[in-house]
Image 1 (tube, one colour):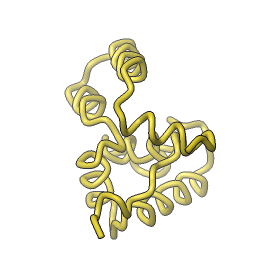
Image 2 (cartoon, one colour):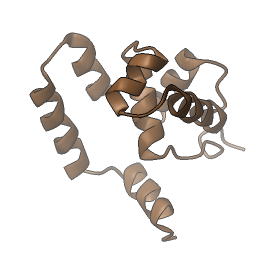
Image 3 (cartoon, one colour):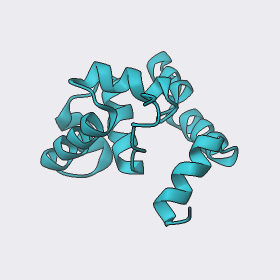
Amino acid sequence: MNATSSLKPLAPRQAEALTHRARGLSNRETAEAMRCSIANVTNLLAECFYKLHARNSTEAVAKAVKHGLIQFALIASVLSGIGTDAQEQLRTRMQRRPTTQTIRIRNNYEGIV
């Protein structure tokens, strides 16, 4: 069985939490950025680890980027220190041009086969 096919798609909030983790934020900082509780962030990341068959954050981020589940360009822009307006423009641009993987994830999320 192919390793890629065994990975489950991440929910939008899970991908967001994992992206914050890729930026190096703690659970507390991630909770503040996502406007939720620390326990919620912990649960979101635990689900990411489960879905990606990862043992830690580093492995989860690497697998998510490798399989296109989170956008590396967005992470790179955050790490390089561009402003939040530029990040929002980049995020919007990526959402306008969905990949086959994104369409497949959206269809699964909406119950369309």
